[in-house]
Image 1 (cartoon, rainbow, N blue to C red):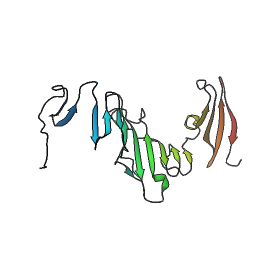
Image 2: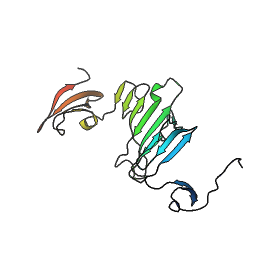
Image 3: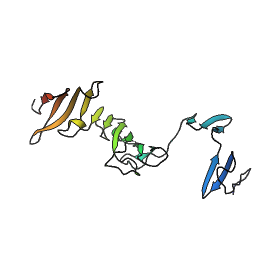
Length: 204
């Protein structure tokens, strides 16, 4: 249907010729031998360089797969386990032309055992960087730094750690004081003990 020079591809395998283009089982392939390099040029300038260990792109990369402001369905980048489509982490983006700055975001999703199946893309949004702030466990932060923590669970709060294998720590987390009352605890972990050093209740 087009005009100009064309290349007609015949069925074949990638190992038939060391440098080749072809079609195999409905897949179009482009192959060079091990140790060789794929290079793509525009107007004499090298734009893409692919070798056995990495790919270099010498220009701005535009990924047109962002989500609307309330969607997390499409991924911009996926990271999988070696040679498979398993245990996939994801980077996603959300876009809004309204004043909802916390819905203009880059979202990071990490595959989690017990939540995601091995062949699924990570479903939990672990961290979101938005135009309103950074959310950890909070996809639409309302403050500069917005962190989600479960009640009375120190492991979901903020941890300030020393450099000696988690022996000395300070944990900050919310807890339920009583009916409709919430406070915060500052817990100190030492070698053989754990002390709630400061308790802040809703009334002081």
